[in-house]
Length: 265
Ligand SMILES: Cc1cc2nc3c(=O)[nH]c(=O)nc-3n(C[C@H](O)[C@H](O)[C@H](O)COP(=O)(O)OP(=O)(O)OC[C@H]3O[C@@H](n4cnc5c(N)ncnc54)[C@H](O)[C@@H]3O)c2cc1C
Image 1: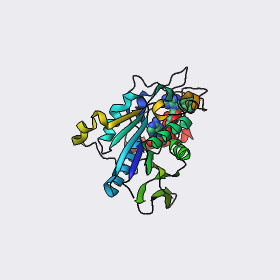
Image 2 (image 1 turned 45 degrees about the vertical axis):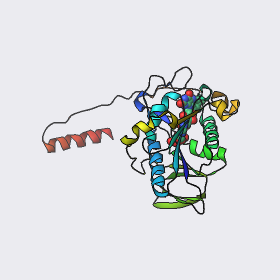
Image 3 (image 1 turned 45 degrees about the horizontal axis):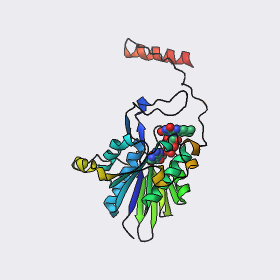
Image 4 (image 1 turned 90 degrees about the vertical axis):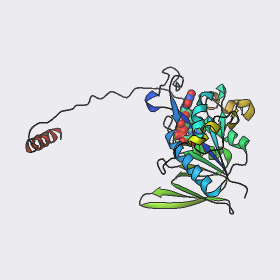
């Protein structure tokens, strides 16, 4: 088998404390918010790096989003990936999971020669978990979700993985190429390699493709390609929290606590 080529799908997300939604359009407001790599994608990244350590090959990072995501992606590159592909075009904006997976699938096709596509379990902002299965559907490839371990049989062109189930785990096997979502927190992502930092900053490390370069169908991308409509938006009601300090000896405090608990039943 030729060298293993892994694509890791990396979403850049707003820091959770800075997520803002436009009350009129119901779209995420990204400008003026600080961004980070979607934390579960760090587990997918670590899975890819450990497979590269074991079998060799190369890792491409694939992301759809605005060009100002570039610095975040270069951090992932300095963890040990080989190249970044950023799909960026104003026409991609407002994509739901259908349009996102179509666009990412076109990116995978254009990269070419991909054996394995790793995704995080879900994003910290959209959190649908629909992207990995959707991507497999557009690509017509096999898929495994929520794996905690992955190994590759290069001769038989198979991916094998372990998924935890109630009271145990199952071992699953699918032909390559395949899409795999990696269970959040199943491994400990390594730190960026500081010796790779300046290499990762080089201009040639990133390829940016717009809608024309991908030759995407205009009615499959962005808002026109997104049948999902956010029809309403509401704030969760604020709940006042009560706090009370008990004083006295341990016995008195225990007695009073028991009284309070009894009254609240
Ligand atoms: C009507 C509508 C409008 C929307 N408008 C916007 C908008 O304007 N801006 C916006 O940011 N979001 C918007 N969204 C949210 C958008 O649909 C999702 O962010 C996107 O489709 C990915 O879904 P998710 O976040 O649930 O990913 P999940 O399925 O939860 O993510 C699983 C994994 O898929 C991969 N992945 C997900 N997204 C990407 C990506 N972009 N690039 C690379 N890998 C990825 C990652 O590995 C991730 O861990 C909109 C949603 C709807 C319904």
